Image (cartoon, rainbow, N blue to C red):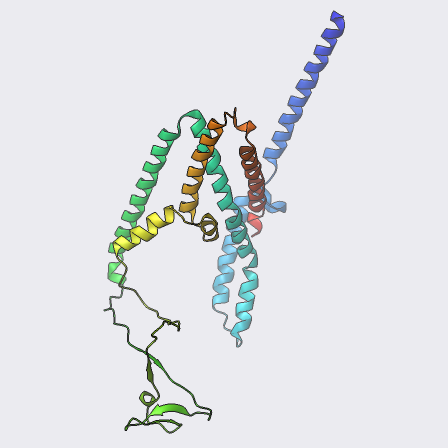
Length: 299
């Protein structure tokens, strides 16, 4: 009996060692596997530099090409940039939900370890520091380039004018010198056929352009910071790629999820269906990111 037991233990030990060796061999093969497609995957940095240089050269060359039909050039440029557009679109599609899921899981881990407050303070401090640094850099760059700006006086918006064409070709509704309204093609200047439009109920859409002088620093901070951080529609935040609002929502969601798990007396993350779902989604998104990165030298 003891001999059989010793033999079984020896067999189990050999099997464990074999599994360990196979696992290490698999990891080694996975780490050594090139990232990219074909021969370009062996030297991804050189491949990216080569294609970047080729892209710059082709772009400069096409900028000097002026065909008779500019529509052909526009179509060619559109198809040449297809792979790059698809690559950028795929990254935007995957990165945002990946950040959302990872922030939730990270906050949940910090709450479980009791380090959420310390990490939170550091994160807020780092965010404020980088924000202030970006503002200072923008102000300094503006002051340096101030001499290159073209300064003009804002002009007041004038009234909107409309003209009415009659059934006869080239004839418009015109007002003569004595105030008579008539359809005629024999008018002296455009002022006779220009009528001021007073949009009383706002039924018409007015198009305007140029710089604005009605934006204050208070409006910029109010709309560009606080309203961005606290979104009123998380689906809309994903649609508009509002990273700040999504990250804030993910942090609050992670804190709330941790509180719910504690109230339900759930032992560990493995017992939570929501956490398992988020971890599986995170794994899928990471795999998709790896697939996108593999074709980087080719795009």
